[in-house]
Image 1 (tube, chains in turn red, green):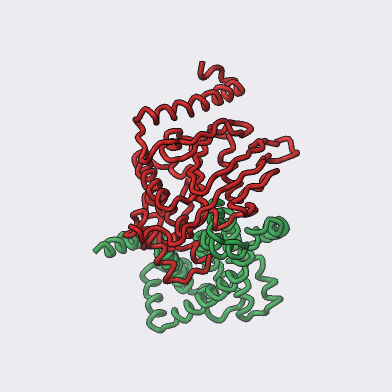
Image 2 (image 1 turned 90 degrees about the horizontal axis):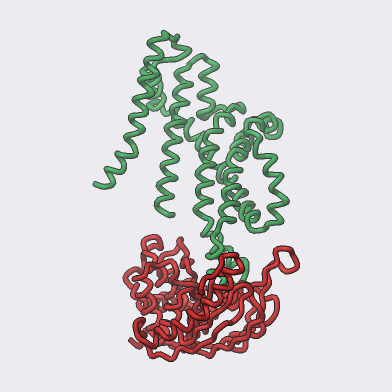
Length: 274
Length: 251
């Protein structure tokens, strides 16, 4: 089992300092997506960002990935400010984003090739990572021969292969059926417990957030702000049906419901909660 | 076994179509009693066809025409693909060039024949030029749309996987992602080039399927005209089959 873990542990914390994002600033279609946000993620934390659509959780993730330049403030990985996408901040996308012209192992080895790792070594690392997600027998297959769940496992192998110090996940299991989702959640937890990378995981499933994360952050809608920041002090593996799990769920839902009620009122939908 | 079934199922419809065409053709000849110079019967045409095959003359025409189309098509790809890649990648460049392209695109390759003769005379260059025009736009437009329709998520994936500069991103992600659409453009343009060969060979050719047709008309040998037309049709289908095969194999 030991040969599956990367040789060098690489994990860093994330500091988010006064990050605010406004789209189309100064134009009539100006949207304030994110109010100034301050957060500190410790190395090895598993953070879940939860919130209704439009709460800015994906915007925050895109800032951390370097895709979106914040209107103000700076985010840091370790001591390095995030200014552009970097192979050290790995990302897993909802729709897998595998390269269809490459087979599975070449997808997993892609980042290593960019890093200049020589061929034999990058295939060896890619194979180890495919083994970690149980896809070692599918190395030579083409992308369209895989199911959705297998594609996402390949994408997870790809992001771990380059040994980044943080891993960003944008609703990675959102497009999967419930059973596949459960299996992948379990597998992701096993991998994370082994190498303790800092994970920032965006989801709109409260259950998923509490099942996976060591810390859950609830965000509010339009403009995005932090509503709740809660450590989940439950041992892994967690039981959906345990009382403690339910208590955490209730706590998060109460906060979310307040927000949803506000949103619905704003949209003229009337009462939601009361 | 499976392969044989596949071959049969792709070839059979063409055999049925061939039989159907011959039947209609023969009945038109029988009912109208058309003179042999106006519409020769299928049998006579088939005889001429085999005579030309046996004498090897048909292959001389085929190779001349194919050679012209292939060289013009390759030349066209060499210009249109890089230009299309640049236009798809740089918005400013596209905004500048797009109106030029749109103005030239509706002009039929046939309209270029007089200028082609004036500029290049009656040698090979003029014919290559005509087919170049005919093949250029399908390749260019498909390349542009191929680059522009690359899934932005793939570009982002490339960025977080270490493609730090535009060049790496372009060669490692955008170009391979656009490749299937570019190949469609190459296939379509070979078809338009093949259709334009007659026009190109009207520019005073001494050999080629277009020459076979126009010469047949001049000496009132409609069977030669029809042999040229049939050959173009059959080769067109075969060339497309080759592209299909390559496409299935690599895409």
